[in-house]
Image (spheres, rainbow, N blue to C red):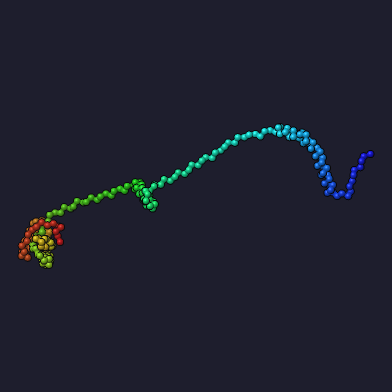
Length: 208
């Protein structure tokens, strides 16, 4: 006759769960503890470890970063000891400006030289003649005679001349291109004004 299961109607559900868990733990201990004590479990662990494939070895290429080149140091002209920095800067700027002006002058197209105007040949003046009537030390006297001659129809003028440190004012009539005309004019003047004159060569630069 089969045994009947024991029932505990008064036990609650939580207690039943605790008892069930304890039974499971005990059963597991009964199974695994003997294996650990006699070494069978360790032997199985070693066997499994031996059958595991070895860890592959990989060689990774080592990338060495390129070393950046250091920037080139700026070349600065070293000024002599005792010279202020401002003077060096001004000298450098002046030299740079001079070089710039030199390059500009070298590249600028050369201006064409202007043609030099040639002097026209002086007009050749034909020789002329005048009649000199009188010389005065006072200019007013010379002007008075010139006015009389012009009223009489004779072209006349005054020339200034220095003689022995004195200034003289000479009254002359003309000019005339031909000597014959000068002779005829002299004769007319002597008759009209009773003055003794002379015929002379005349230059325009002497006229006043």
